[in-house]
Amino acid sequence: MEVESISKVIPGIAILVLGILEAIGGLYLNDRRSKNDFTIELISLVTLPTLIQPAIFLLVIWAMQLFAPNLEDYFISTSFWWHILAFLILDDMTQYWWHRLSHVNRTMWKLHRPHHVVEEMGVLVTYRNATLYYAFMPGIWFSAALVYMGMGYVYLFYLPIKLVIIMLAHSETKWDRILYRYKVLSPLAWIIERTISTPSTHYAHHGLTAEDGVSHPNGNYGNLLFLWDVLFGTAKITRKYPTRFGAWNQVKEPWYVQLLFPIIRSKDPRSELHSIKTNNDYDPSVDFKEFNR
Image (cartoon, rainbow, N blue to C red):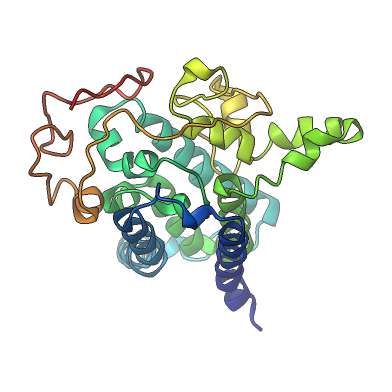
């Protein structure tokens, strides 16, 4: 099997295996996940890799062939370590800041909100975001440019590794528990939890409120590397897992509103997705408060 095919297959196998393990554990048998939630998750899972990312890559490569033909494969002979560093900075670090911005800017929050309104974790949460959240994500555009400039071979390894780590960070399997169970593994745990996203650190990001002493809704933004949170002062490591997840505004908009906002908007005036700016707009940098229906 060619490297390109393996690169595409690995994330698919990972999400299938994790989904089966979660199903065996009973995650999808409770009543917290509605049909609306499943619809959001499945559509997001399909559209990002088959429509949004390919469209961005085609557009970027077309534009660069037109305006910067001399840059095609310009870096193909440089060290693969530089290629890795380029993707870590221009893709993963920019995604950290894009993610962080969505918890500060009220308009950006509305595009990221589908990722947080679900009340439980699981591998299917990984891709829950509005279409425009991904369409404008700088890291995808930068990655396309890097591939055009000759770094495509490294991308075939970088992307599946990143996706698998992000899936594992959202997964109900909580694979990092074994690192905290045995003292002999404590030094290894210290390194891993400060390097990549783990269930413990990313669950904290999805936790409902910081009042529980574990959750960190406005921090732990890292995707592949948790190192960005450590470097930029947004890290919180407790080695524990929140028990409550969700977001402040519990208005349940249809899947098409959540995914296609602001092109399609909520008909419910109580919803922050009713318009670009509403009386119910929430400052996502403020900790959870109960929503008055």
